[in-house]
Amino acid sequence: MVNEKWITVNGRRVRILQGGSGKPTLIFIHGLSFSADTWNECCLGYFERKHEVYAIDMPYGPRSRSDHFERESENDYAEHLKAVIDALGTLNPILIGASIGGETVLRYLALGYPASAAVVIGPVGVNRIDLAKISRPVLGIWGSRDNVSPRYNADLLTRFGFKVVYIDGAGHPAYLDKTEEFIKIVEEFLSEVGTAAITDR
Image (cartoon, rainbow, N blue to C red; front, side, top):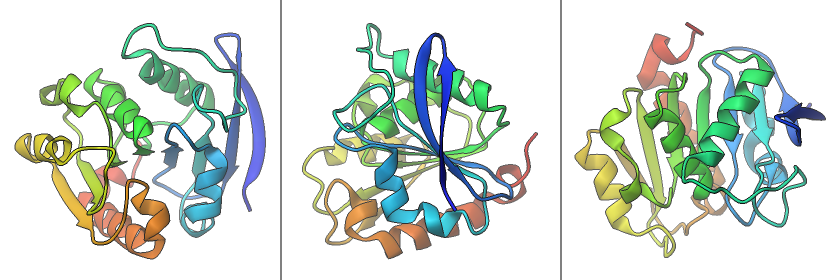
């Protein structure tokens, strides 16, 4: 069962949905037009059967209930995510982010912050991130009908050696359009990354 909790990070109130138990811990970061509730409606109930899960209301977008702020530098949301993860006391989680949430996850990894692996769904702004600095396994997921995050973003991930898969018939929020297929792909990725993504180090 997923429960709502509030924490304060750097003077800002942050709303979090938390549930489940078991490693690896999964942390979900929503897109601009969504909120932590979107993940709950989509797939937290499934993943909490095996994992400790958190969905964070990020400081952007009209549906988020956390304190909002506009980023002044491109890494501000990634720095905020790091502060939230530190406050939760979670070591080396697997990060799952969609759209601007996916961009935030990639920036977090490029800054060298701790995580075991990441899944990004239609991340935006990929061309502005130094992907060469990312040393963790990353899976990119795109809907074949994504008209928000251009395919060159996916090509950039592939060029830097990261795996990319497409969900046929899905749009930008591929995890919502084809939830069962999304879950299957993520489960396969968790199996592929193996022990490094299953134990906190």
